[in-house]
Image (tube, rainbow, N blue to C red):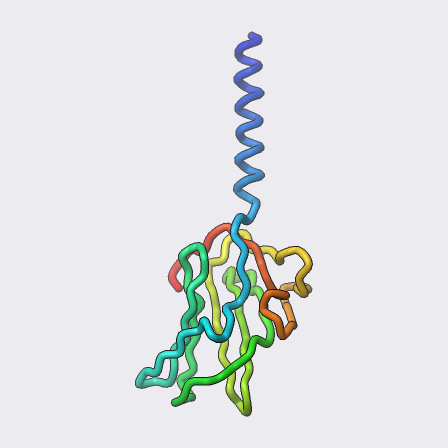
Length: 139
């Protein structure tokens, strides 16, 4: 009986520990620095890409432009329905880039950031940092 109780207690501890670990994001990131964004000309405008730890890619496109943009970070948002982080960059005139990272698992704002209700307005990307456990799905 005592052995059975010890085994049951050990299983319960493992279960609770495993659940707590599964719910805890283990990676941190922020929107890419503008200089880290690859801008590639195509027959249909420009395509934008930047990599992220956890084997994912920020992706974006602008079929309306025929030139690369010099931009600065403007804001970030999180869309719960698609598990996506969206990063916006602005430049001179109508220059703008939007990058999206889809399939962000266990997203939550990093401590001491400017996130409020899924939106982060800051000129500094690190003020919009976030935590996550993985990036899944097609980018």
